[in-house]
Image (tube, rainbow, N blue to C red; front, side, top):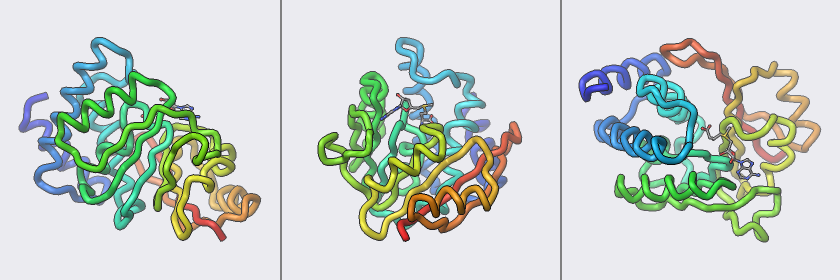
Length: 217
Ligand SMILES: C[S@@+](CC[C@H](N)C(=O)[O-])C[C@H]1O[C@@H](n2cnc3c(N)ncnc32)[C@H](O)[C@@H]1O
């Protein structure tokens, strides 16, 4: 994808999602895509490799939750894979400290290399397994905890609160749509409350996504 087409697709995708990103974000995402595709040719990081799909399914889907993440000083991305949603969010929110955790070493190696190549300050890649015990795992708590395609919602809501600072929130990026009643019930069972929930569609494929935010009662 050439620079002009990338910029055009990014702009129209952001507009469809109702978000805006700074002028330096596009060129940085292009660099991130180049790194991802270069690494992916050698080590398998993601099944999504067509540039248009990387832009939509990794970059734009990550940025779609900007409204839920904005204002956080620290973000913890559990099961980050090749860095999604944490890396694109960091590009738009450079002041926010971001820790990305995965059990697969090569994914963390990629995250570290990509962050260095993009000159990102305040990005930490952590090779660890999240099992609900942040102290023993060496995983820092954050104001906002996020994950995409990590666990089923019930398992995620069991695990997540341990990683959130007092007054913080849990952001769940869901492929499978949950009704408001289901979200409320899941939250109540764990002494959490639903702060917000909304569905959105990816701008080019129309694939449906949902993002729900939870806080401790
Ligand atoms: C389906 S991928 C999603 C990756 C990324 N969040 C995305 O949306 O592109 C799930 C990732 O979670 C990681 N993972 C699974 N269980 C984990 C755990 N307990 N702690 C940390 N990472 C885990 C896997 O290695 C994998 O990279």
